[in-house]
Length: 129
Image (cartoon, rainbow, N blue to C red):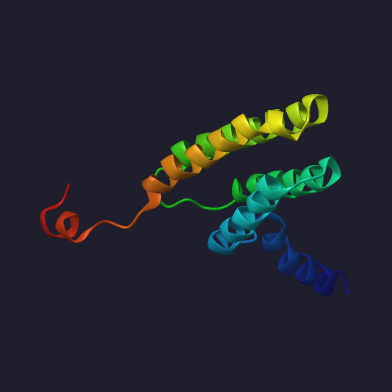
């Protein structure tokens, strides 16, 4: 009986330490949708719900495995979280219009950090960097 319990316990040990292999592409699409809802919100409660969902998804993205530029990608996600927290704070203290600046900065960060993960172009493949 003890041997059986030990074997069962060993079966579950890898799952305790394994990353859930987050589908980063799907998570990023969900982040984009949550961000869109955040930008389009017209009521503070709607904004807070959307920005909270967005921040949860960004934090979940930090657990993904990045195959290139991992350190820079994680720094970018930290910057996005900081801007989202600032946007939420400003929206709650000064109104939704005050959150527009940090939200634009988030969009700029998205564009900047997505460039790190673009596939190489034809000429880069042919001649290298």
